Length: 529
Image (cartoon, rainbow, N blue to C red; front, side):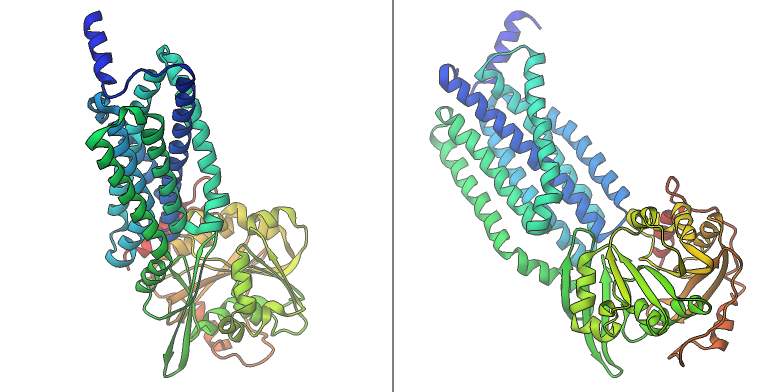
């Protein structure tokens, strides 16, 4: 390109702005960089909101994060290229892009939640939303760079350094605000809508305040009306978000929802319906059924009582925040228990919700029980107590966060807390529906130095469900319960140790922190049913 062509291109690139100088120029430059800061913060919040929503609705945080980040980064590159022809009308183009980004970004979580609840099209919708948002975010920087250069000419290196320094700092603040401010105070739906409003306000400030002299006539009116429409839509969505969330959540469950809490760790939902057998109360964590009150006693009796046969003065329960496993443990009058549960809200519900209190028989408030809210993995690393029985009652390993609780490293920590002659029992999923997962857990326990005894029973809500009794030496299955149980008998337990010919023991490698095979098995097997 010749010098003449370069001059012509430069003039064309900023055709819709007039020179800015003096005090107003310094003020305008500071205002523009402030807008860069806010836009960067908002853009990162949109990314984190998509990742967080996927982890709640689908699980598999690693896959969700990979999809969102890969698609958005690719789309940002496409958006940067697409913005080149728009530089001749930088102010108008930026206004349109920013208002569109504010609207779509603010509504992104609401839209994806609706796609999941009503259409079962979450992943395709996620790809589309991530691409569109990335496209718009990528188009911001080239246009802002044109406007920055028009305010005060700099060499390319200095201009890029100033722009990206502010951009990265904004991303830092947005990344910190999302988990520590927006989620705790407003939740995902309202929080993302508020960010959309902030995004719209930043764009309007740059267009209607910093460059107000360069926007006249019909353009000013049209963009003003568009700004009002975007802000009005976001405000209306913000006012209706609570009602929408209740309606959409109910659409995902067959029975009426009687309690629901979105916590930093999980989505907790309790449903209840009337049946000829009495009320059927169900607990769901991140959409996965944890128990039905109609048959939960089968699950919890089979989990707890084989491990309690023998010395059981000191019992450790990892997970089980609903208090149902603790109920079975405290049926032994000479037993004391320590329960470690990650989510304080789950503990609060188990202690105060009338439905859970009726089921767990107020076990979470029993003086013989010590309830600790902590991550089980971290707690085991710092605690030095020994226990006669350890009950591992964790959610299924179909998410990255729970897969670590089914690793050789975790079971090695569990083994270190066993007293002489102590036993550990692990709920291990279904040996029928997910045989690879079941036998991988068995292999992982053995890799941690524990001898295992597998068994399985029928729990109608779950189907064929399996457990692993383990210790430093091989354990036999027997009962020494304080009284008759509703389901489990000596004969039933003996039969539970027999596996059919179509579900034999599988020789599989263990799951570790660095290679979480259990996550791949769990996600692959259950998707078939």
